[in-house]
Length: 140
Image (cartoon, rainbow, N blue to C red; front, top):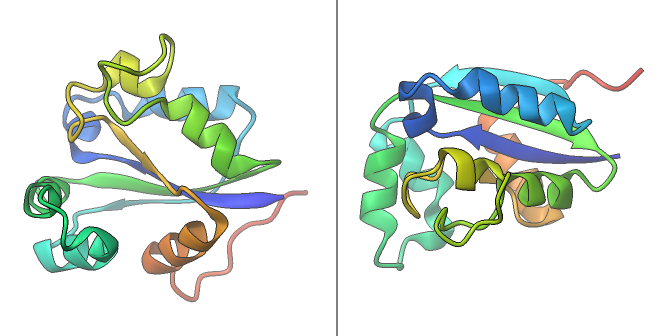
């Protein structure tokens, strides 16, 4: 079993579509092992996205991610990282495949409704960032 972090971003929470995204997660067979509603400070968003600090989109991204509540989740399942990334679709909703979350709910590259870890090492960091020292529910 693999675990990954998923975020339902502030744009999706503000538009009241989080439930629809959660439904897609469950329908895809991914297990939700932890979930919290968070309101990131600018500093917390900068810490989470520190790997992108030198990128030109960093200031806008961290401003957006601290603009309102978001839902952070730990998802578990066989190949959870890849499955969640396929369910989300391409970063840019304009180029995402039909039926993906970002195609259906995203409005721009930045406001694309969801985030997901891209590798096991990233997932370990990201899960620990939002759920430090928490024992996650296990399957069974």
